[in-house]
Amino acid sequence: MLTALVAAAPSLALLTYFYLRDRYDREPISCLAIAYLLGMYAMLAAQSLAAVLANAVSEEWLHLGGEPARLFEALVLSGLIEEIAKWAMLMAAVYHWRAFDEPLDGLIYGVTIALGFATLENFFYLSSHGVGIAWQRAVFAVPAHALFGGAMGYYAGRIKFSAKAGRRASGVWRDQILCLALPVLFHGAYNFALLHGLNWFIWVAITALSISFWVFVLRRVRRAQKASPFRPKTMLPTDFRLPPSARGV
Image: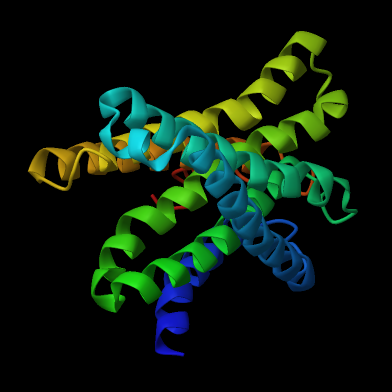
């Protein structure tokens, strides 16, 4: 029970953070719960597929194959397979929900699916290695999953509402590619760094990658907020200043 609570705590904290970013038309808790469970299912599916593919190329090569093996493990076994599993849950199920009714919803649901995935993965990892490493997972691995899912969901939202935005077909195709390609590349880069050991240089690299991911996703949160059809039309601009007469000057 302790392991389950520790494994879930960072995911629930991050989910709350992103949920509160949806200021104008928040998603039903029931929909978030289903998306969270879909993320857990995606984790089991990805784990099974990765095991099959690892056996196909041989465990010996993965351990002794040098940089090509590390790149394959990071980009294919982790990045590609895990992100495809999340992408399938997002696009095959959540994308068609009635509650998915504005671009920001894609980002929120992408994060939710990713955090369901991260929760179960974290539970298995802590069960094997102990809760002593929970802080490392909470600071780096779990937020990384949320950010991968956020990038994926942002572009899913752009795809779904591209017609209303009057966007060209070329832009929609680009978003369809980025919806999966960016999370795979982000994930692959993150895991590739981890596979080189946990010395000071790797920690610096992972920290730099994490900060870059945060900046990338939070900028897209702001873009999606501004594009929300539920955003009050009478909102004052962010740089609004009261006139001198109103300030009593």
